[in-house]
Structure formats: structure tokens, C-alpha cells
Length: 384
Image (tube, rainbow, N blue to C red):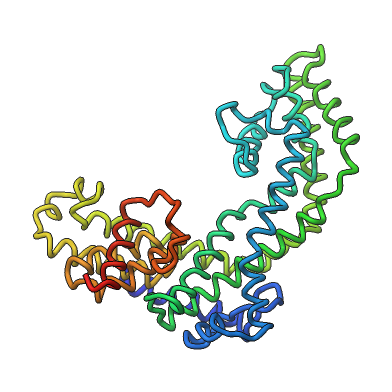
């Protein structure tokens, strides 16, 4: 089976899977959702609805990311107070994502840091024995991705209501499935972070951190001390695992493994096609470094090839901002604003920019592609 047929078959199977999992306007966690079986016209009607229950549903989706982000910010402040940010390089901005990534690196081989002494050793010892820290890190593993998915999905749906974005039935089903999936995960993250807010374990964390540092710096030989540290860390890890079994987010990820694999495959299959599209464009870094057989093509042929590949990406991932720009950029060269405008507007929507709302870009340093898209749409509106 050729790659094109394989991708098409995969997408058909994935859409069927999503429709079965999310049918009837219910998200994977049983809360209200769009449902992957929703028609494009129904999705747009819902976005425009003046019904109180519909507006409340949409407001909840818009507010989810902010709610979880606020909980995350309060968690970070707690980590600052506990000294956990001392494990980060002084030049690195302390964020939860940075802290979790740094901990994952240090956890693999903590002995050298633990025996070094100072604030970093103390911070790492606390983190290693802090079951709630470990649990929060697991809960928030995909937080940035889920926020991006919800915001981009809602932006494209709104762009089809108040702008020039065109929404096919396939687009509507895929976007509905993805926003429902990410919203469910964000709700579970919110529940878990609230459950993990208890602060009555500080004394126990300090006691176990002291014990860990003591065995790391004892008078025994290095081999004995390394083994003792390993035992202490494994004990803390087992305690964290016991706690994690009660978390909503980890259970939900297990239940939704098929949907998560579908989404991961969407991202994976988009990459080579997007790179091919960028290579076809004469005015990109990839295009300038393209093989001779591509660089020898006429500009018209290269732009057509880029647009064709970008549309294939968007058929797989309708929320791919770079593919939307490539589709717009090539269509503008080949056919003009009538063909490029829907793609330029989709690109801007995904980036959080609306041509009719200056508040979305007036205080923003626009990237060249964003300026190109905004200028193209505004010129068209003015008849230029």
C-alpha cells in the first residue's frame, strides 16, 4: 500500500475511532463536548449560539487553560518557597516545565549533586522524596500541548464564524475530537492539582530529605553510598507510584490510549510532508538548501508543489499553522487573494490574531509571516 493510501486509511480509521469514543456531544471524561460526529454546520451553530447553556460550555472551554495555569503558578510559588528552583541554572527562567525537565535529568544520576553540598543538593534531595512533586510532574506532562490544542481548536472554529476560515466536514470532526480530548485532560489535571494542594507533608519531606543527604555523604565508601542513595530514591519512587494510582489524569490517559496514539500519529505523519512543502518554497531556508532537481524547477512549479503538500498536511492536521501559511503563501502567488485568504486567516487564527480586532496584534511584534498574512487580508478588505 502506498503512503498516500496508508495515510488516508489511517485517517478514516482514526475518525471512526474518535466518533465512537466521543459520539453524542460527550467528551472522553463524560462531560459535555462537541463530539467527533458533529457536522461542520452544527459546530458553527454552536459557536454562534446565544443559548445560556451553550455560552457556558464555550466559556468553560476558554477558561480551562487559565484555571490550570493559575493552579500551576501557585504550585511554582510553593516550589520557590521550598527552594526547588535552586536546581535550575541561574540564567534559566524558573517555570514548571523547566523544573520538571531538570528534575528528570538529575533523577537519572542524582549522586554527584547530592554529595556536592549547598542549596542545589538540598533542593534535589527534597524533590526526590517529595511524592506530591513527582505526582504533579506526571499530571502536567502534556499541559502545554493540551492548552495549545484547545486554544487552536477554538480559534479555528471562531475564525470560521467571524472571519474567512473555511471548515470542511473532515476538519470539523478532527478538530472536535481534539478539543474534546484536550479539554477532558485539562479538567482531570485541574482536579488532580486541587487534590494535591495539601501542604501538611513538609515536615516529613524534610525528614526524608535529611536521611537521603545523610546516606549520600556518610563515611562509607562511594559504592556503599551510591547503593544507599539508590534504595532511598527507589523507596520514594514507589511511594509516588502509589499516589499516582489515585490520580484522574493518569487513569484517563490509560483509558484514552488509542485516541492519544491517534493524535501522536497525526503529528508524526505531518512532519515529512511539511518539510517537503518548505523545501519546495524558493524563499525558505529549506528551499534554498533543496537538491538541484528542486532548485532547477520554475518558481511557479515549486509554489504549486509546496501548496499541494501543504494541503496534504492540513488534511491530516487542520491545526498546523505552518502548513496553513504555506498553503496561503503559495495560493497567493499562483491564484491571488480569493484563494489564499481562507488559509491566511486560518494561519492568523491559530496564531491568535484576528484582522478585524486590532487588540490581537497592536501591541504584538508580528513575525514576517504574520505581517504578510495580516497585510494580505486587510488589503483585500480595502479592495487593494
